[in-house]
Image (cartoon, rainbow, N blue to C red; front, side, top):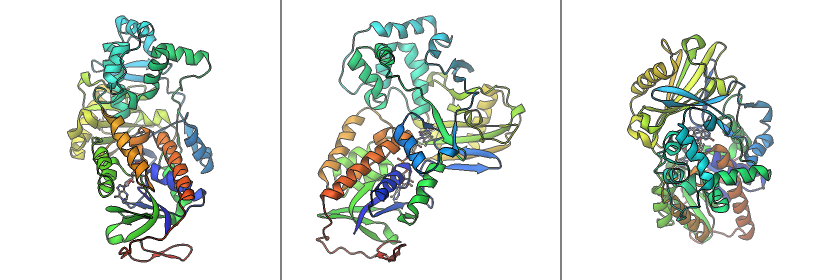
Length: 477
Ligand SMILES: Cc1cc2nc3c(=O)[nH]c(=O)nc-3n(C[C@H](O)[C@H](O)[C@H](O)COP(=O)(O)OP(=O)(O)OC[C@H]3O[C@@H](n4cnc5c(N)ncnc54)[C@H](O)[C@@H]3O)c2cc1C
């Protein structure tokens, strides 16, 4: 019997499998698609590099940095380019540039003097109510005023989470800010205290690799080698006294002492239905609205804007079809051939879910017009690619904490069941790595304390025998 079957070959599942392999565990990872990586897909096309999903990692997360080192990927790392001096926000159909310095919003005229004063006044406000399910919008409005909530936080949540700030749970989405209010009464006071005591707020340094974020799943996959089976969609799992049956349909069935669901939440919800109904309902209740990425490559002289930043975000009040864009070739070297630039637009999320699923041509027309208006692009792009994700980023929407509690309860009460993925950790790739490593530690402990025992029920293991490198036979292709 296998120690652990991991279902889902995105960054989360691959990291769990890699960690367990290094702990000497016998693992098999099953991935529905023909290639692993999940959202983390990079594609090089004629000197351009398109990121279909994530385009950067948070460099302040030690576990992800350490994983890069262990995989031998540090020499390939690329950090934010020198030209990244600003972030931009749309205001009245034009871009306002804001320094990436923490005080950028104070020094920019993007916010009115009244809006800036409201931010400063946060220092004097008493701590507010604490019912644990306040929205991001309500929290920021209460602490920093309406203008900051509408013109800064709303575009930020649109860009980071493809969500409306009024739908997201503050505690689940920005736990550090909520905790600062609890601990120091004021977020600004908390930030100042942390700076004075040397515990700086992390400056969001970002990095990637020369060939994009897809480098990480590719390296994990190479290390895991024949422990991975692609093209296998698990459609049912069954908990038995000493382990699990994992059913991959026509591909066959596996027996394992423990199982890890590392899929998107709607898949985890479906698979949990045979095991723990309330946890299944909780996972199925997590929204993940569709999102489309429209990548365009231009000659530099086709774009009037200097592109000296990460990209731009739009507030929902601006009523624009594109929620934001990244200036990929300004962020990292090697994203466009010499004399060219690469820009990715993001369309959809909870602001405009239907738009994300429009035919590719419609999306290209929308983005072409948007870039003409906002960035002053001229002529046809040299390269256009569209990637649509029918299920985009899982959202930490109101009620998220109770959904997480139901899922944690499933892990506590079903021996050998483990869950990981971006709906636990927050959407960042680095956060997924952290959660996956932590999950691998728990699984290892579980396997240690529950010695292998034969299955009590004689299940029908009707799959095809699998060839492994060690020559043993398993019921899986
Ligand atoms: C457009 C976009 C932009 C993003 N930008 C960033 C960014 O800049 N920086 C950042 O840090 N993060 C970003 N993210 C978020 C980040 O990419 C994801 O949160 C992260 O990659 C999720 O990894 P995961 O392994 O948890 O899930 P996934 O990548 O969703 O992997 C789940 C895997 O499970 C597989 N699976 C599903 N069902 C089954 C089944 N029945 N049997 C077997 N396998 C199954 C799927 O095929 C998939 O491979 C972005 C995401 C998107 C969509």
